[in-house]
Image (cartoon, rainbow, N blue to C red; front, side):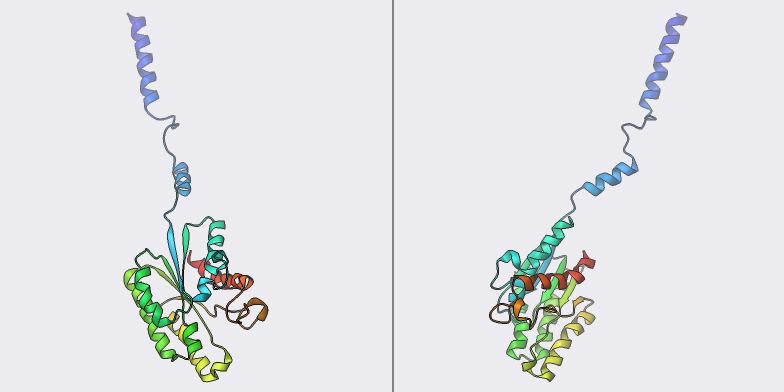
Length: 225
């Protein structure tokens, strides 16, 4: 009996120690938890590029537009963002104000506003353009108050007159400052006026020009992702 009692005692001790978890083999460790969290798929966020033919990539394959090129950069960095190209050729700031509501039906995490160039070419008063752009920004803020905002600055050709050109140029910086928006000083920097980087009309960038536009925007956008 004593021998059997001793064996039962050993068996009891072995079972207790085996179930105590001291081995730690089945327990999740902080390091493993963190690693698993890092590997878990992140929810996709939307970047809405709202603009005119410059955003749409007029005359080019959609994959050559600067929003599409930025998507490639995002994918190469394995970031969970989707670039939505909402560029419409011929769009003015007034047209954009009327169109934005429909686009805001989808979630927006980052909003890139590129409008005003057609206003400038038509000689629309800068004060009116600024008012329309502010209305667009207000709508985005009201629907998605946590969205990050980016303003793409624009300039008009010198033949529009020096006074008009200076008044037009400044509204984009003013809007960016007044609405806490990141600013791309001049979307067409390095492209505007360069014949080899523009299509035959002298206005719309070539595929090579769009690559420069993508870099101009990326310099500002990258810090927001």
